[in-house]
Length: 122
Length: 122
DNA sequence: AGTTTTTTCAACCGAACGGTTGACCAGCGC
DNA sequence: GCGCTGGTCAACCGTTCGGTTGAAAAAACT
Image (cartoon, rainbow over all chains, first blue to last red; front, side, top):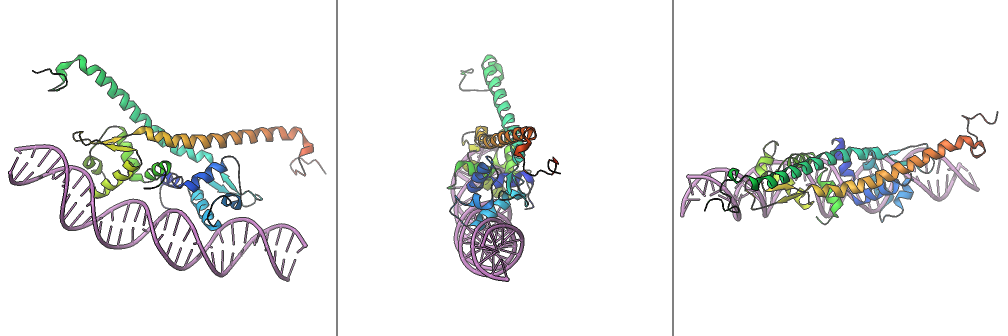
């Protein structure tokens, strides 16, 4: 539980049961019992999963709310998308630039040293 | 290793060291040794982390590539963003719809039952 | 060729994970 | 009052995880 927030969120969603819970909570709040019903495991286990989601910030529990205390905090997902998008974009950018270099290279054979594919030094 | 692909990717990025590796690989391929250098752990440990990333599909190793065999496969990140965006959007949509309901409600006080804020029954 | 560097394999360790069972506690209906 | 229903807490169990060390294998450089 001492891990950084990003690790907690990623780790929380690394479990298929917890992902399914999040998916179901996206369409509406629910109680622990309701959440537990479809799964072939004890209510205690579901309660544990819920706690993991809560510690990650993905879910909140409102004690006073009758019959549907579990609520999804979807904004936390933005933490992940921000991280992912940053590096995906960076890799994409680099790939694009590499493409440019490869396209320019054949026009200037002097810069290539001993490239066997060019046959520049017979 | 028998887990579903999505779980593997989320789980792979749940570790800060592995996230940092991915971040660095986004700006260019690297060798295992290069990747290991900044971290305060054995090269074997880094090799293990790399294997996890490889099993998740986030990274590939090209044996023939001189001195920089480790390559980031950024498209795999789309797997996650697709999942995340789907449910974030759904939750957002639901929230928007709830907002509409709350905005319409005050116009029809007959539907509100004993709301103390309205002072409808003194 | 031979040697040195780089990377992986294997066994081990402590801690965390995902699940179980059993006991416990808070409301709610009677 | 009493008993259900719904939920959590606590202890336990097998497996996985993140790291170590030591040895072996593979590549790279003379």
